Image 1 (cartoon, rainbow, N blue to C red):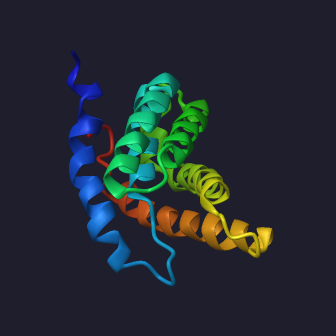
Image 2 (cartoon, rainbow, N blue to C red):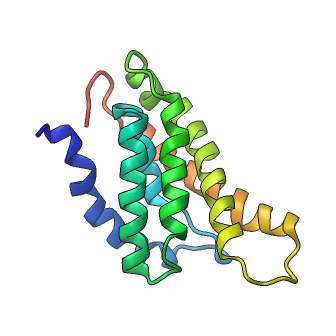
Image 3 (cartoon, one colour):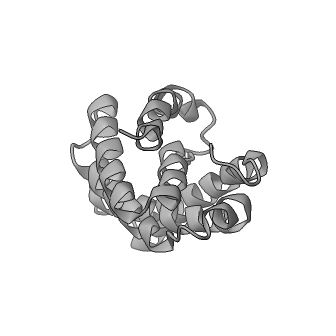
Length: 162
């Protein structure tokens, strides 16, 4: 088995611990970034759509089981995110995507779709305005996550894989 296909799952363990225990501490008004999406988009752009879809499914399932959230919601949204990210996959442009500002823009789009899907699946309050739900639980976490992605872009080695 190639080590390239195992790396995301090795990196996933510390990322999920940070996501569950540290990220809620830096949340602003309940809006927090999603580190799993950054990891998912990164490795999907490197390995392709099928890999991203399966990895999103596994990441979502494990996160659902660990966090105690409604089973299947995170799994569905992460699977959808991996699938959509796969449309940006081009093996000739991997370094270009990961070392330029295209990476944060892809993360912004995918995180917005992920957050909106997740908020529609988990929002049980019927008095919530759909526009407010779309903005506060969909777009603001996407912007927060995209801003953090600039750090990954800045430290990505030019001409090499992580």
